[in-house]
Length: 296
Image (cartoon, rainbow, N blue to C red; front, side, top):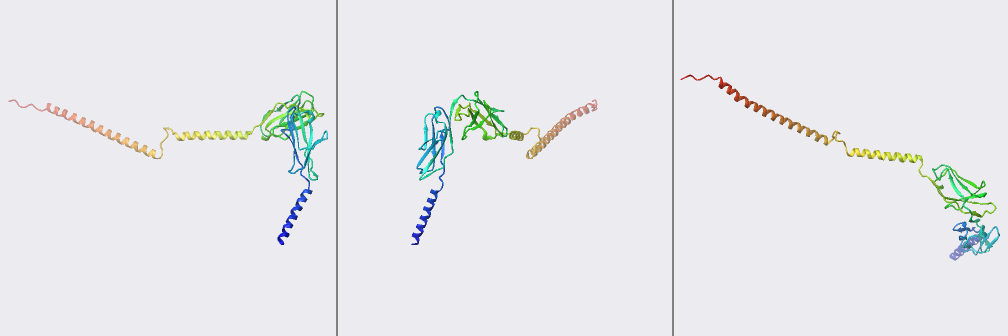
């Protein structure tokens, strides 16, 4: 009996949590344009509304015209000016509707001639330096937008006629990338020009301190290699050390002894030769002075 009561109690808790969850607010959906919300004229695009599993109905709205479609996707095979505008979506689950999604601005590009994009002072800058990207048009547009590949959306700015400056202060490696700009009129905010030619902004990775450190390391390695070469190949004039010195000393002593022995032998030979030559000469001298024998 106690087990049955515990099972009914757990079931009641679970049902209560489910009912409470159903009474709570539904999460809002997300609205995306694929491949991008910036669509060249004549190119395809698909607008998709995504919500949690189990949604009963989706509604896709165009806010300017106040038209809506009870579907999760809108596929456009070729972009036209009539499709531009602001979109949002929502879904129904049971008797409840979700909050609306964030608005999506669908823009047609290529309606006007492309502007030009330049970087001041240069497209290659060191970290920490300020750089300005300038978008210029030959027409009197009062709106400009800068777009970086990989970002979720463009950066818009109202500026002077014919041109706009996009300053980037204290650049870092994250600012490196490919940029394009667009020009358009505030009277037709979703009809843009063609994109400018791409501009590649490069933020160098090595600062001056890194260069100096690298130069110092190269010099140190060079000095080490030179010292290694000198150590491996000693000069012949350097005095020998250790066992080599002992061998060198013994060799000199042997040479001196041999020289002394040879010198003694030479002196002895010379003395013997001189002595042998001197004896016959003295004998002959004595023979000359010997008295004559008596006459018979």
